[in-house]
Length: 327
Image (cartoon, rainbow, N blue to C red; front, side, top):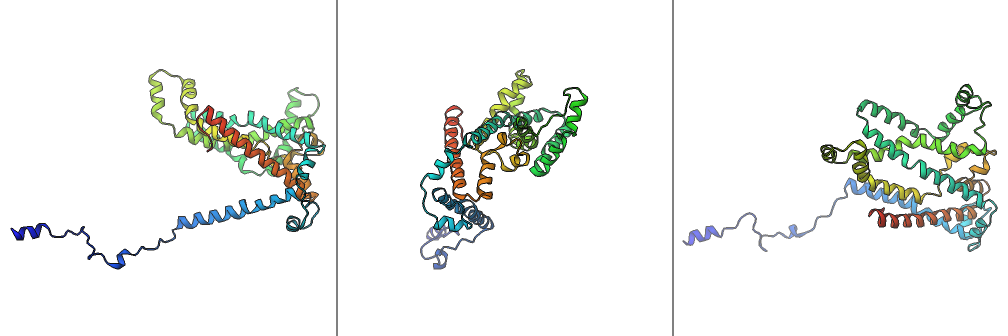
């Protein structure tokens, strides 16, 4: 009986006592720095260097640093100006025209160019022929990989007075004389159309991916209920990708003062300057060319404040109306 009891109480390999624990086993091993941790640390380092550290230069917006040859000298040695640079910008004779062009172009792009990739992605998903769908995706993606200088040069060649566009318009009798697309009245349509053609395919990628992630059983159930193609689009596809649409809409609204310098600069001339001068080109001309660092820093700071406010307002409205937002 005693022998059986001793066998019953025999230690198993999983039982530990204070005597059986080695002092070395109680020491915590140092965690090794993994490859993913190294990559994360490097990413944070570069974000700090290139995104947060340059924000120190915003101090120039409150200083009289215009005309200094050395920017660092302007930051540390120029006298304080308070809000004079902001006041100068708001009182600038070009302020109204620049803001009108900036807001007008971005509002049109938000109205036309924002829904275009969504519609295109839905149309692609409805194509039953996989090869045709892939071909259309490739064709529409290609312009995005061209720089605006190259792409803009091609467009300017096509719309020249003796280009293909004018040749077609003349031969079809739509116009009697070549259209001068370089005039100011054609600048806004030119920007809208070129940005739409260049970014349509690339902008639809995220929506194509979102549509591909929708549960196919939803469409099967809709087919059993007798739903047609339009019913499935409006009652399944669009509601399922609505969070993605809301997210990109909020980001687009927050960037309403950003036109894209390279795009505008490619098509801007002295002839269309009254319709093409936007904040991005305005900052470049006064900052880089005329070395008005404090003045243009104040303009850039103004853009950032507006973007943050619009982001917060857009996120608040989206959460109240749709239940989803950026944060």
